[in-house]
Length: 485
Ligand code: ARG
Image 1 (tube, protein in one colour):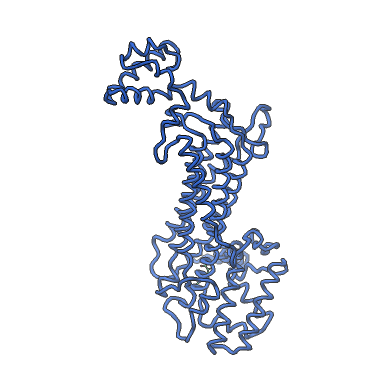
Image 2 (tube, rainbow, N blue to C red; image 1 turned 135 degrees about the vertical axis):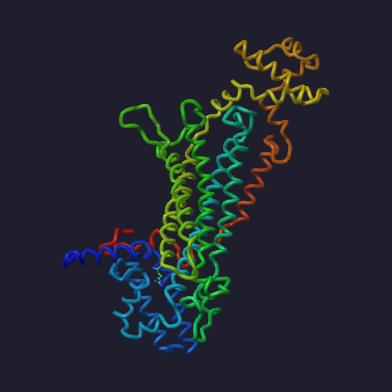
């Protein structure tokens, strides 16, 4: 038997349906890109005689006014109009009347939204590269400030061989360098213009895509209209570059958490980057490093969500694609502050040279050097390894370190040991690793210099473009009924 539904239920259903489809509360962040795209499109329509010159001018004027309204917080957002595109178009009708209806000639929201998102992704890739380069600069500052600080290098989190702190920090420089290059390539992936593809099949008007691309700063035009409206690979490139960068930040954060513990005591974070405990007054918790590590999960999640959204889509545009933007926005909002926080945390950090050296001294990190010593005297490495393993056991059993053993102890283990074995120390071990990419002071000094040059030459793009200053692009007043920016 059909259930009779009351009016209240129908109203509720309608509200639920509109809440379900609305994207305005997040896609209004694209207003700059949307307006720039529309202006370029309207100018082209005028130039091509598809609309008149006066109509084109009226549309462009209206759009500029709308941009000013949004930026001054005067724009009235209407969630019932679903998305940013419809909000701007509706306001254009208020401002210039029926001519507004001509803007959407030779265009679809499908090529429009893809264009907006690409413009946005491109600008944010530039911002990210700048932040990555900044973080790399901070790492170099830290390395240069601590040129001779040494610490145990670890494998399996076991003290392994001594290394220079600068060498350790330069390892992260390399990671972030690769990240910056990944963002350069994500930027290039976004730099292809879908506009002019129409809903999916191209357009029955004599449009001029080249001039629109030029005006929007795109270096290429999508070659297949069906691909153009449904392709979000550029977004996956962005999100995976972000996931990898966050993974690197997270590794660094993990080391900061470990190093700032009482157990390690290798680093002291400045007060701004630690928090106290409400009940344990002695605590200096590395919350920022922990959050950077923790937020990596959501960025991975954004990549997985986007991949999953895309995997089942038949050609071409499907409304599922609306789910792409929040994944990007959330990633931008996580990655960019994380990079800045990490740089700030590092530049205020004090590395405890004494604790690091002590950790290296109270260890067996010179065992490999002893084996190498025997190799230089002609013993095969495997045998030398065995001799030093025995020596290490002997020392451990006596509660001593290798450098506490006497020459007699060494000579009992192998007759190849002579007095100069006592010269093996942390500095000598480090200096000996003078191969390309090694930790010797000479190599590290060269690597530091080379890194500075690389960073200078990498000079980030001017950036910004249409989407400059993303943070200010969130309009002051939230859409009524929406959940704010
Ligand atoms: N809000 C939509 C999105 O983000 C805009 C495109 C809508 N197109 C459509 N055919 N319904 O994908």
